[in-house]
Structure formats: structure tokens, C-alpha cells
Length: 595
Ligand code: TEU
Image 1 (cartoon, rainbow, N blue to C red):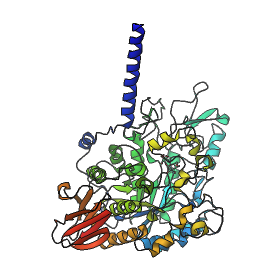
Image 2: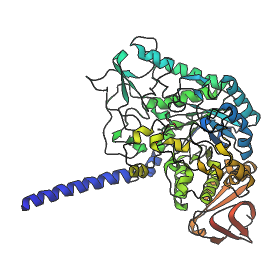
Image 3: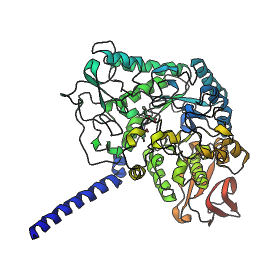
Image 4: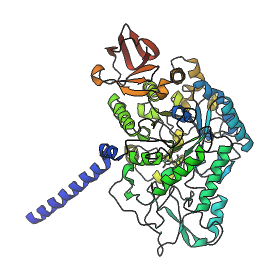
């Protein structure tokens, strides 16, 4: 009996030890940034012209439009290009300088445009090539820049290239996708798709082979190692550049290449994302993520962009450690991607002065000038940022003030400027093709890891007004339902209300233009000792201007002295003011001053 007890205790002990290790591994922040930083070159010698006229993208502010949900002009319940064109004056009037459009190319729309079936024509429900030309023209007429979304990792399985490729083993496009023989009746190796739910390999009878799809099975990966494919992609890139598109956002860029000997990936106990080590969903993505070829590819694309004299740029949707990011930007010569999305704030963040300070310090250490970090809080894949702020508009004011005054390129997702909330469309009614895979996963777990299992909820129609259809469409039935709260959260009302979130964006974007120091100046934090708890203060300076920003991350009033004498001209105040050298910030208040 005692022996049984002893062994039971040992077994329990071991299980407990394992569970503790598992939880630690999955919850701990395992980044060793200091060591990483030491390995990076301290000197960057840019290969290309760094003049301001060519490097305008370092100083711009970007607004993301998700075409399907922006503005429906013809009453079919789906946003379109004419609708977008009718709203360009709005985007301009808010003050954004660049617009990035999620894809509107020809596509079966299974992933709403991220499954392209022709890179050089337009999905009819959005418009046509003539309209795209006029969109480019109309954006430029308003002195803004235009960025397209390029999905180069995969096409739709309805793309004529794929239809041909899958038809036999010996057709002219047979090697345009990643095809492999299986092993007996099983896939060629153990690679799972990005979401970790299913094998990344999909069997096709016609070829008796498997094709690789890093994302979903209807999105087969192009074989970018095939020079013919690469040449065709470069042709497409030039096609749009010749049409005067100013830049590209590159979808899942560091998944584009795979190790062509296709070895099994190692298994790991890592369930949650540890992107810096390429580990998630129990797989270390050693051979199908961030391969050396992707760095070369970035450089080749950059060379094409640089051959246009007026400054074009590309931003990568990339994942990984800061080392990965720096490699993609071109380690020594800054000759890779122009910008990379930094996603730390996108899935979750702590709304505290300390957290924000620490993140900025990290970004400043890894992306010192001439590099530029990016600040992004919302996009078409994740819960809207206001959800992470308890839907508190005062906190959204602080977030916007931080984003638009920090050293970096800010990205604002349509509707974020009015505080649109994350919708509540149930998983079972989702149009998002990812949702199905989440059905079996318990809600508490989904919430714990911070994903948005139904991305429809950040894609609901733009709320223009309080009228039925939110001014988005004249049709009662829209592709996704208009949120009920359009009656209280909409553009029209906020344009009238001088205290609205939209006015915060307008004021700050106007200040950015008047005070270019906010775009090109250095960034220095004011010492914590000089500020009350929960207040973040920083100084942006260049040879001509100095601007100081104070943000109160708490709901308590904060009163303190402005130790920086002479800085008493208020540029922006929201629940904050400066009176004879004394600064008062009410709950979640912001103040921007200059001399
Ligand atoms: O997304 C890549 C991606 O892996 C994630 O953003 C993913 O959608 C999210 O983590 C799920 O929780 C890009 C596009 O932004 C997305 O809309 C496309 O569906 C995807 O690529 C495939 O092209």
C-alpha cells in the first residue's frame, strides 16, 4: 500500500512539474532582447538615396481601407471603388496622407480578396481597371499616396495558374506551385498550416500528389523558387508601379519560401505563439518560415521599387523576432523592406504608462534612425483596439495621441478614428473562412490567447451616419450586418461634436503637419521621477522645433509642475490644461505643448 502511495505521489509530482513547465513555457515572455541587440550591427549604411523626397514614407500617416466594408455606391450591400472615391475627401479632411487598400483584385472572395485569381484585374462587384485608374488619380489629385495589398505567398485555387498546374504533372505550369509526392498514404511531411489546425498538404487526384498551402487549403502557395513564377510576379509589381501606385503592403511575407528539401519540422511544447523562435501550435516552423531566400526576395523587390525615381515603398506583414525584422529591412544596408509591421500592440497590450514606455524603448533600441518603427493597433484581422480599452473613448483619445505623436509610421484602420467597436456576429454565422477551425476550441481559451475567431467582427460596415444602413449602403441587407451602435457611433455625429474621437484624430494629424518635428524629430522620455505615477511624458525635438507630450494613463487627476520652462504654448489638450507652469491632467487626459 505504501509503495502504491509512493509511486502515485511520484507520478503526480512529475505531472505537476510537467504542467508547471508547460504553463511557464507558454505564458512566459522568453525574449532575450539584450542579447539580440548585441548581435545586431551598430552601424547602418543605407544603400539607397535617403533624401526626404524619396523617403516620404518614413513620415507619412496611413489609413487602411477594407473595400468590402467602406462605402457601397450601387446598393448591392457590398462596398465598392466608386463608394471609396466618394469618400476620399473625408479621408483627406481627417488628415491622413497615405491610403492602403486591402485587396480588390479578382477573387472568388472566399477569404474576401486574400485569395486572388487575377492580380491584374478587379473583382466586378468592386469595379474595374478604369475605376482603379481613376482611384489612383483621385488619391493623387488630393495630394495623398496610395498603397495596394499584394498577396504573393499564395493565390486562390481558382487562379488559372493553379487550375493548369493541378491538371497534370507535365503541363507548362506544373511547377508553379509547391507539389510533392506523399509518403504511402500520408502527406510529404509533418508541416501544419499557419493556424496549426490541419496539415498544410492537400491531396490532388489528377497528379496523385500533394500541394502545399501555408494558410487555408483554397490558398495554394506559389512556388517562388521557380524563376518563371518570380519573373511573372515582378511583372505584376511593375504593372502597378507603372500605374503610379506608391507602395505595397505585402501579405504574410516571411512565409513565402520553404526549404526545398522539405524536412519534417521539429515538434515543441510551445502551444501559444512564440514567433521569435518560430514556434506555435506544437511546431517549430524551422523549414517553412523566414527562410534565407525571403531576405533575397525583399532585396530584389526593393531594387525594383528604387528604380522609380519618386520614392515607392513596401511594408511587410511579417512575424518573428526583432532580429527577423531587422534582417528583412536589410541588416547593414537598409536595402530590404522599407517598413515592417510591429504587431505587439495588435493582439493585446497593457494600458499603462510603464508598458507603453517599455515598448517604445524596445522599438527605439531595435529601430533607431534611419530606421522607423510602425505603430498599429487595429486591422482587418484582429479585435478593434477600443475593445482592449474597455470601449472607453477617453482611453482611445490617449491611444491616438500616443500613436500620432510617437516617432514612427502610424497605421489607422477604417472606423478606428470614430471608435467603432468589435462586432458580435456569432461564430456559427461567420463568413470568415478561419472561423470554422475555431468552433471546437473553448471560448475561454480563445479569449486567453487573444485571437479574434470570427474576423467578420472587425470588418462590419463603416458607420457613416445614424440612418438605417449607417450611410454605408441603401440596401437593408449588407454583406455583413451593420452594427446597432451606428446610431451613437458614426462619422456624421462626430464631425459635429468638437469633443469627439474623430476631432482628436483631426487635430493631431493637423499638428503633425504644422510641426514636422513630430515626424522627423528625436524621441526622448521625460524621467519618471519628474512625473506623477501613470503619466507618460516625452519630448520630440529637431533643430527648429520642440514638442512635449504628456499622457495620463489613469482615471485619477494628476497635477504637477511643468519643469520645462518656456514651454507654455498649448498645441492640444484633452481633459488637460496648463496654467502658470502647472499641468493638470484629468482622468485619461492629454496635453501637448511647445515653446
Ligand atoms: O493574415 C495573416 C495571418 O496569419 C493573420 O493575420 C491571421 O489572419 C490572424 O492571425 C488570425 O487570427 C493575412 C491577412 O491579413 C489575412 O486577412 C488573410 O486572411 C491571410 O493573410 C491570408 O492571406
